Length: 189
Image (cartoon, rainbow, N blue to C red):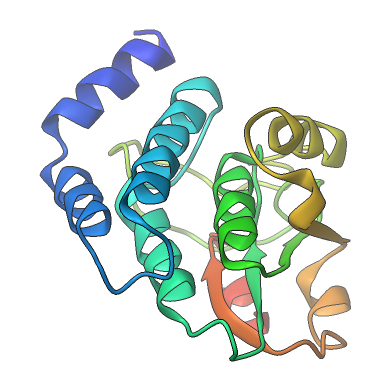
């Protein structure tokens, strides 16, 4: 089944995403108005329809809510660890722009590192392996998706393995999103 058809049926059936979208839309505690919330929702669904993503809209909206609920006078950036093809990064770049913050996107842009971890099923219910190189999105591919669907100007790319890039990161963080697949990567982040 083509991705766009699968995604359409996923949207119809996924009550968690639908409920999260409605809660976000009618959340008057966010630092943006109703029409900005509506435009953001339309854009994140369009991004998911046009790029390969490995997250739910409810996950994205939880981070967006955290960022957009933070008072603007509290300093901090948004951090994403694990970009894949750039769909989530494009969405978070829009959140960062709306909040007047910077997004730092950490990824090797080489796929997963060598590992021997075993895992269950993906969010789509598929049995998966986490072989070296899987979930590869090149830096150029991710930048192209953000340029097309998000806000490239609010995004700073932190290329490299997490254990080489994250320990030296000293910026204050207002919200973070970890989609790193491996236990070892999660511990590093």
